[in-house]
Structure formats: structure tokens, C-alpha cells
Length: 127
Image 1: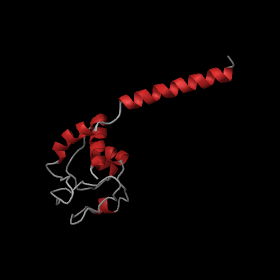
Image 2: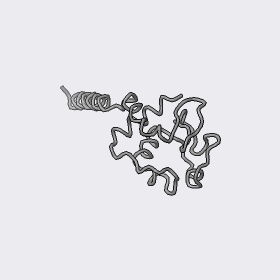
Image 3: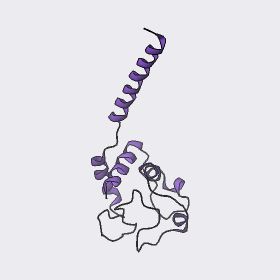
Image 4: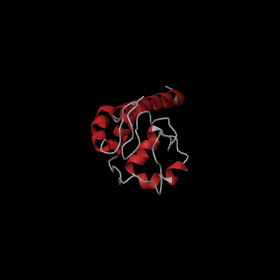
């Protein structure tokens, strides 16, 4: 077997292994929905529902920050320029003060990365 062919097979095997690991570690929206119970104290997540102490999070993924209707946002959030992606939500869920310094959310964050990923995956389902 040529070295090029061997390298191709090794690369293929490594790629397959990486995909298997990634699939095993995929975020779990169902777990995220359970975790959302913590958030539901301050946030709605139902289409058409009003805001609570925090804005309604229905449709948050893909939405520009500070644009939920009838909610008073901090100047920091208004000027953040963020468009919420799953990745940006994960970071914000883990450390809101770091992602948007000066925001009004009185929540220190969830330190567990897997839980933050699960919660962001759940929020992504709200369309």
C-alpha cells in the first residue's frame, strides 16, 4: 500500500472517530427544556406570551439582541450588536456579565458547559 493511500485511510478513520465523538457529545434539547425551569422564573418561552422580568425567549436564535417587543433592555444589551446563535447563547448562559458587560440580567450563569449547550439547544427549538 502506498503511503498516500495509507494516509488517506488514516485520515478517514480519524474523521469517522471525530464524528462519532461529536455525535456522542451532541447537545440534548430535552435536557435543556428541563433546565429551562430555572429560567422560567424570569422568562417566557411561548409564542405570543408576554415578557416577565426578562424578555420572552421564543424565537431567540437568529434574533438580534434587545429586540423583543415591549421589554426595557439595558444600554449594554442594546449596543451589544449580538445576533443570538446557539454558540453565543451558550457563552451568555455560562457567563452573562462577560458576554455583555453591564447587562441587567441578575444571573451569574451556569458553569456546566454541557448544561449550557443543552439549554441553548432547547432555545433553538423555539421557532
